Image 1 (cartoon, helix red, strand yellow):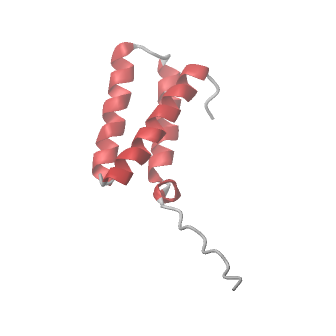
Image 2 (image 1 turned 45 degrees about the vertical axis):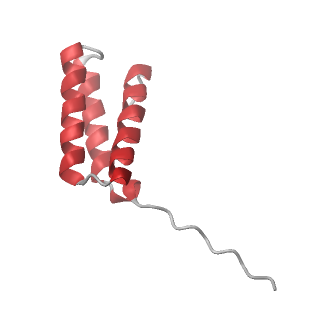
Length: 82
């Protein structure tokens, strides 16, 4: 579980980006490449400590492999009262 504010912020941006790419029509391999590039950029920039980056990557991969994060909710039908 992430507890550092900077890593939480990066996780939120990353998960939002993954969902946005999925909704645009990109598929799993593209999302995985996006995740790998994002993590490589964070490592190159030394934005967060290494152990926090590893934890962030684990949580992001867990998010990516959970299919429920990419399902579109179906709207509920309104009851017809007439």
